[in-house]
Image (cartoon, rainbow, N blue to C red; front, side, top):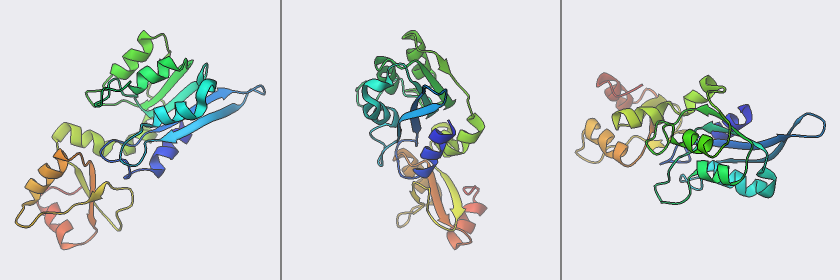
Length: 204
């Protein structure tokens, strides 16, 4: 699971409008150690999802394997394609281990339910505290409709910079960017904009 979380962390800020996910497909080798069959993260731009890439890379070897995923697999796709939970069940994996729950309505327990209904054992909450920083902004946007704005020295790991259109208020800009799917935005530390956003209560 730490390998899946680390893989996701390396892609943080590059998978907007979807949250970043790390997925590792592994099994026990003949010596009793872990053999990694495939590893993937959410692709830039949010698709393909990590699970579908990892299953494609593992191929037939995924049957009987354990899959470690940093966020609950989707139970439904906005495109109408097979969900990641359906793909995992169809691949014949022996077990799915999940770090963080997924509050998106297309998941929110639906992914776990699909897997269990298909007879796949699921373990949840494994290293959840280590994975949670990856999804703090994602949860904030789903709960409030607004992206989380933070001051930092650079934009590494952020979806984008917080920018207002001419004549636009910070509140209106946040609403616009939230509708566009941005979850985590940055503003230069110590800048006039950062100070303004902090005074308005918009800066974390």
